[in-house]
Length: 409
Length: 114
Image (cartoon, rainbow over the protein chains, first blue to last red):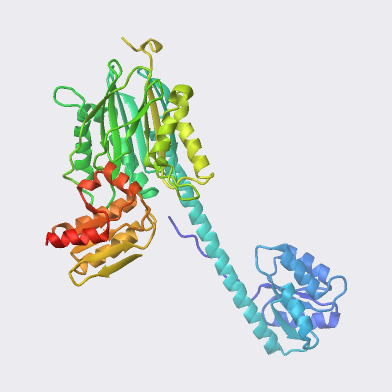
């Protein structure tokens, strides 16, 4: 990323509008100003001055107080109301020290005063002050512009990264091997620390995993994308089965733990991974700090599966357990990241696992397709429309009736 | 962000000065506790009595300081509310940290096993 160059700072030579109805006084001021190296622009009344200001981009106005059409104070008000990109420094020429008039002029937005008949030295000093302020304002505007341009570029990069990350995630509204699978993914920042996948491992087994990297934002998303590229169907086939070809998800999680425990920082992730046999409905899974999956039968009876497990990448010596559950035909499995249970409402109550389970329980009426978005909607209501503070992933899967799919034997 | 009380008998009680230990303050928490450990504190109770919520970053920081203490001393936690306890259970942190219901129980128990 290259720094944008600062614009050249304005120097004497910059334009000064002289608003003065007296020809003699105007000519006198203009010759003084030109003599000081500025470019003087004559305006014989306030209305002309305003018109010239918009057309010339002048940054200093020296205005008489009493003028026909638009007097000095009214002219100043109009200048301030224009809200121009550049700040216009207004110097009022007054006849005498009239405190009440000066108060009124200051309130209208006048910056400085000089008395009629002031010396060239005094005028020069006033203009130098004005130039200093204009330079300062210009530098600030440049910095703001650079910060905005840099920020725009970072946002653009993040959106590109988010699109790349999204492309890694499956679009789960589909039938895979006789399972109906639906998902929802709501990153809390532009990029996310969540990752999940669901795919056929062979003609009988379905592989499913969800990962939640600790923290969120860019740092977490880099790790989640790395994990997304690592955990492929091939990775499942080579790591998630034992020597006899039986599912051994703890083996896969142990391999991941070995790989990710090396780093010295506090980054770790929680995960759940499953292998489901489409013929027998046998679910083998390993839970590594990820919230328990919820099993819901056709009657709407919901139970959490598993009693926890160490996160991955936290302790090299951690051991992991295999769990088994039977998924009956017509029953469903709901996996949901902790962003749901931990979501707080305006009264700072957490949503809790019981509410997640209550939504999972509505699966028989709602159908599996609507479960992920029902959870998203409920969280939106719970948070009164406020975005979640953590990345949310929901995957719901139904083992369909065998006659529903031509894949079955 | 942490409040520390050190007792003559060698105990250091640390209380996070925030109701939520999250990504927003986890690093500060870890750095400040690490300074105390590096300063020689080796019998440390981190009291979560006033902490209502701990997210994954907060847990990461807590494990980080536990690793920092290592075998040089003892670090225990106390005062976990039911939500934090639930998180400890799901992540098996109840097998990694010695958890006491409050500071008094923690210090009594640690003194007995001195």
